[in-house]
Length: 262
Image (tube, rainbow, N blue to C red; front, side, top):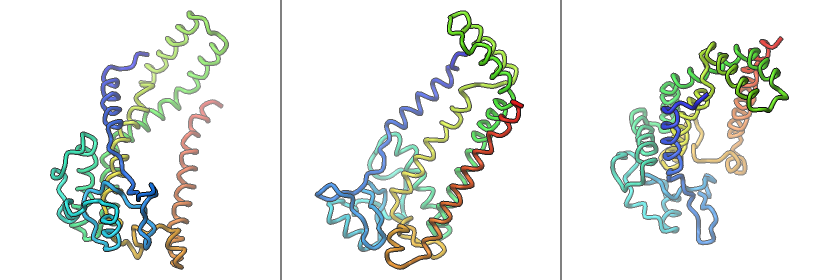
């Protein structure tokens, strides 16, 4: 099956955007080592979008010749101000950083703002997620027929057999309304948003200076544990539990396809 021209164009545009990303730059000292806040253990970002307010952090930036005084305050950040950093940063990263900060100013907590912004992005991408899930379900229904064709032409590599195989697979895809590449494309469409969201978080100091339900957002669990603050073990446990259930959920998602083979 030929790759749809529309999908080709979208893929090319997304590749150009991702490849032109400015990316998060880690602040390094004269020896090339990452500069960390000794209190929180956080590695500092060099190309931050707004000014930090933590005194220790400000001192570290100044010691490493980063002119943070030219940056806007996080509480007054506007994504259409400052220097032009290219298409990726201007179109994706800065608006998302502004969204987090705007919500943070409304709810008076940047940690809570991060959760709300994450949910908003998740809701906005529901149509794409749904289409990807639909393609997966259709593929699961068509799997017995696809497997039958694959087995039929398993040891046939001549041109005529390969052409017949392609035609038969095409008929199955048409029967179940499957677009073989669209499932991957729908998932790929979400990538720029999630990558930009992560970059926006890393480039906004206000997030890491705030707290949420007693946890300092810029403090790494390892640093906290070294300082005797054992409540940060909860973060490690939560991450472990979420990873475990996420893995099992994805593992179970393939079950319908397996059942159809019986």
